[in-house]
Length: 265
Image 1 (cartoon, rainbow, N blue to C red):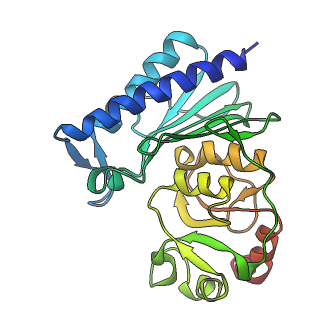
Image 2 (cartoon, rainbow, N blue to C red):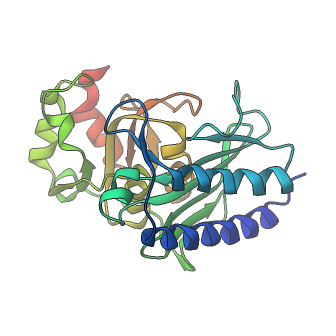
């Protein structure tokens, strides 16, 4: 039986250690490569950080599965057992260009259920974390359950791509939402945007295509606070495939689904 307290202690130590190494990398020259397209970037620091975590996990928890963005983990067919879902640097473009607005993201699932979630904003030294049934925190500050909010009072995270011509969604679907909410933001890191929903800095986050490692940790944290994380049709996520994401405070999630996203059904 897994000792989750031990796992929690280990992750917090490993994340802080990895964060220190990443901050130190600001003074070195990065090796930058592209993946699926010229804007899908990966650096030597992404790869080294994922390998760092995998080395620790393999040593301490050899029976656990690992799903990592950079491909150093396992080829998974299911989430049976205990699975670590890791994004060593979420927001690599920000890491390269800004040296801010990026995060380490780690979610741990057991038989498909989210147990632990960690999002570490390295530059600001803010660690968002949650354990199922025991609350969510930013560093050692306990986060309050998420309150409901009206559409008119909401600030949502939404990339401008989705209200202009694109290959994934009719921009006319989300344009009215953009007009009706109080404001929109885009930070370029799914993990941080989900952390901001959890902490109340944002009220919702909508995007068209994310991988499991982008959202696994944020899902645990948001749901622990009473929020909702689904696809754009309100359906549960499959954490073995890419999917549109809609993360939101309670109440607001239902309102946006009913008023704007029903056209996708």
